[in-house]
Amino acid sequence: MAERPARKPRKPHSAQVVRTERLTPHMQRVVLGGDGLAEFTAGTSTDHYVKLLFGPEGVSYPEPFDMERIREEFPREQWPVTRTYTVRAWDPEVRELTLDFVIHGDEGLAGPWATRVQPGEVVRFMGPGGAYAPDAGADWHLLAGDESALPAIAASLEALPDGAVAHAFIEVSGREEEQKINSDVEVVWLHRGNRPQGEALVEAVRALEFPQGRVHAFVHGEAGFVKELRQLLRVEREVAREDLSISGYWRLGHNEDGWQASKRAWNAQVEAEQEASA
Image (cartoon, rainbow, N blue to C red; front, side):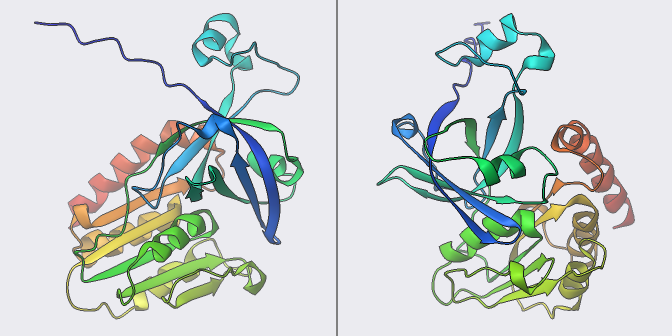
């Protein structure tokens, strides 16, 4: 039996910050560009994401930047950590990559970085990944999520052809967090206020009178409400697994490192529970 060829290490992309913009009180846009994006491609999925690499404060790495070398020569606590963000837009003509960040003051790693980063600074990242795009063969589309899913939902709505039937629900903290989306689909903006994360979103989707025909659904955001909507769609509404893109982007009480470490087991448990109740 022939041996499989060794898997080539993935090479990070390197880009420079072109400009930044505060879209809403809690959403910051960072646009990346430069020759380092010459080999970057995106556009087959509307939920494309990249994994930004952040080194610990005070740690510098030799050039050229090489993750394999870093893992060999640096102690684990000095390796870069990753934070995952959706590609809001990619313009191959001018090689500009747009990423939007949810901001919670000084909380977290990537959000505070996005608010202070300056044009010209170097950013390294892996990717893109992604698997969803609106299915043109579906009779209608359902898109639901919180702020973390807003960039992917916006990109998906803008990719829909004119006249497509779609229902979009986006939960944000308040009216000031609403954004303009270049789509003829009327977005239902749900203002959370002091209510628990996702509660208004679950209520709205549950109250929706589902149109006839096959739905293609995209549901992402905080893992707790995603679990509830998975139950609604998979078990109660009997949406086929292949017609449903659904996952927790994050989980209350966990940073990305902790959530990613437990996400596979969480999803497997949820799936098993809901299959048993079907």
